[in-house]
Amino acid sequence: MIKVGEYNVLKVLREVEFGFYLDDGAEGILLPKRFVPEGLAVGDEIKVFVYHDSEGRLIATTQEPKGVVGDIVKLKAVTVTNQGAFLDWGLMKDIFVPKSKQLSGMRQGAEYLVKIYIDEQTGRVAATEKIEPFLSNEHLTVKENDSVDLIVYRRTDIGYLVIINNIHTGVLHFNEIYQNIGGGDKMKGFIKTIRPENKIDVVVGKQGYERVEDEAGKILRLLNENNGYLPYHDKSKPEEIYDFFGMSKKSFKMAVGSLFKQQKITLAKTGIKLLES
Image (tube, rainbow, N blue to C red; front, side, top):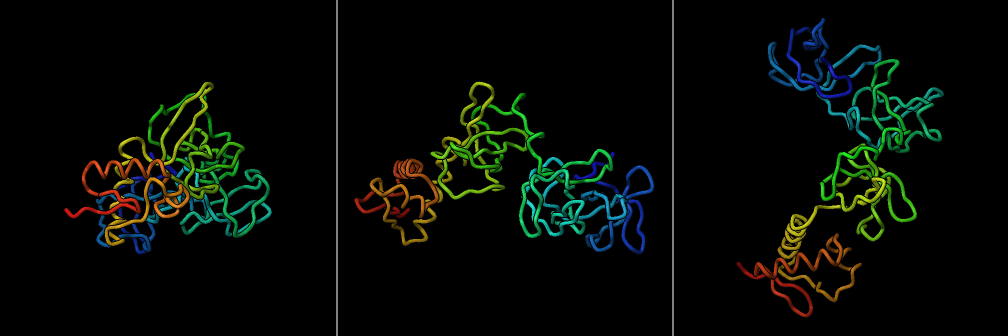
C-alpha cells in the first residue's frame, strides 16, 4: 500500500534509461535518474518520498521535503495565481494551497504556516492555511511532564498559543519565555499542567534534572571558551544572564549549584571559576 505524501520503503523492480521503477504492486513508480543514489541495483530496497508529478502520475524521489502529510510547517510562497499559491517545500514540484484554503490571500515571497494534507477529490498532496479544524483537545494524547514538539501559532494576551505534536493546542505563558519567538518557530518542550476542559500549559526545554544537566553542560562549555572564568553570579541581572547564556536566572542558579556540588566550579563574588580537573 503506497502512502502518498509520505516516505515509503520500496523494492527496485527494473532499470530503464531514465531511472528505476519501484514496486507499487502494479506497473511501478518511477524514481528519476537524477535522484538515483550510486550503486542502486534491481532487487534493492530504498526509502523514497512519493507524490504526484505535474501530470498527475505518482513519482518517487530521494529529495527530502520540508514536511510530510500531517505536518504543520512554515513555507515560502513562490508563485501566486488566481486559483491559489504554490509554496516551496523542498521538492522539484511546489506544493499547492487552493484559494479556498487561504486565510486572507497569500503574497509571493511571504512565509505561511500551513498543514500538509491529502486532497480528497484529487488524492494529491496539498496544503492549507486553515489549521484549526485539524486541532483538538477533546481527546488528549499527552499527559503532564510529557516531552512534546511545539510550534508557535499566534500571540495572545497571556502568552503564545502553540501547537502540540501537530494535533493539540496549549499556551506558553509570557513568564515562561526567555527567548525571542515568532509564528512558525519550532521547539522542544514539555507539558507543565493540564487544567479543566483539557486546557494545556507548556514550557520550552526539558523537564527536571535533564534540563539542569543540559544547562550545566552549556555553562562548562562557555567557561572553557572564556579561560575558565565568567563574570556572572547570583546577583547578576536576569536579562544579563539571559543575553549571555540563553537561560533564565532560575535555571542558571540551579545549573551553577549542580556544578558546585560536583566540584567542577568555584564561586567568587565577581563570578564563577572552572576548577582544574
